[in-house]
View 1 (tube, rainbow, N blue to C red):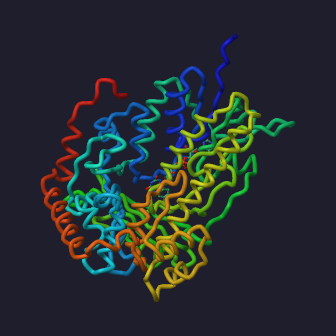
View 2 (view 1 turned 45 degrees about the vertical axis):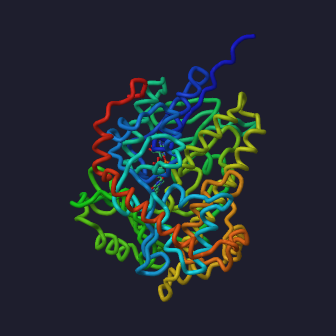
View 3 (view 1 turned 90 degrees about the horizontal axis):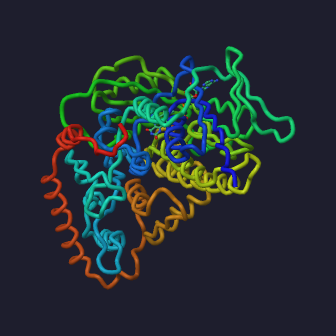
Length: 507
Ligand SMILES: Cc1cc2nc3c(=O)[nH]c(=O)nc-3n(C[C@H](O)[C@H](O)[C@H](O)COP(=O)(O)OP(=O)(O)OC[C@H]3O[C@@H](n4cnc5c(N)ncnc54)[C@H](O)[C@@H]3O)c2cc1C
């Protein structure tokens, strides 16, 4: 049997999504694929995307990237969770810390024990028992770099400079044989019969043909949206923020925080992301509730240090293309859709789409079984994340501010209503098949936003809540003490920055 000829894959766009795809596909497909990436410096990239979730370890380690190299190349810091300030009420704050809260005792999950004691008035705030949160609030950090982390480890992600990350991945991809073409895509050519994409016509009378095309052209969605006319499902009725302003400022003196700050403002929310060399800031807001000038004023007034430039405006509509893969074209990143960075999920969605695509990669463009399953799984993944994000808004208690009043009174997706009612009724959270967010994460955010279950698990009815209270306070004390034995975030970062790269790591 003669060997299968290599499939030729053309990636349109060289933002973070394009270079993640190029680096991963060139590594995993090797000689089975010839990969070309086209990008235009005249257009540039969106250039934001600084916060990640712990699953990024899977992507980096699959690519052979070792942690010290990654930290040095991308100016990264560590992230133990996200603090939500002012979301429930103006002066309230809670954390969605990665990792587990407390520990199970016998057959009882920790959440059930905590709830039993909480309803009896003998438990503290949930965050006291989440070691990630305790360490984050003490600005402490230690990590094994392993994924999944062992139960004693802190579970962490990174803050990084997304542009540097894309550049780093580009060097890897080019070393793996990816051809980069600098050029402007002016036209998408389609076959008359099946309608598949046959070539991209570039400025300077150039034409790039391929078997398969990956649309990473950002919000333009040049191939999937514009050429193939795949409709966009608009979710702005649930996530009405439609603009962002992004600006960096200098790092200020003081402890380096190992968490993202998400601070609710009058008509949206502000992010604050500490990197090694600067702090990334942004305001996500609803243009129906605040003018661009007021939004800029709000952001600039709330920086730690003077802005390094004028805030950069970004407009978006929350939602997604109804099929991420149509004909012989897959869209990744912003070309596939966008949900605001409230839980730092966009780069993760690029990563999972790449992993899924590698599984289903067609030997011929007309094969459709994998495509259908891919689209179904992608849709489910997006819907589940959407519900989680919508919940943050819907459960706010900031009455008297029109934006927050509007999002509190909107009608919610049925899937979300069911989840919240179940938790209110019984304190139970069910993680759906393939769902990104864990029972732990949902519980922290539901409790953090002020949802109080009415009943505890009947299985904990026989446990004495005073004894449970003693157990919980000794656990909280132990976590406090353990946190003080850890290096500070800054110390741990410096340690890792100076660590040698592994001998087999990609440089
Ligand atoms: C306000 C905001 C905050 C965000 N924060 C986070 C976060 O904290 N965490 C996270 O995970 N994600 C975040 N994201 C999402 C993240 O920024 C994107 O998912 C990521 O950067 C991928 O972008 P992209 O590569 O799809 O698009 P882009 O960066 O826009 O890249 C598009 C590419 O296509 C090229 N291109 C377009 N048209 C043409 C053409 N005609 N010819 C040739 N080339 C073309 C461009 O030159 C560019 O190379 C955020 C997004 C926004 C808007």
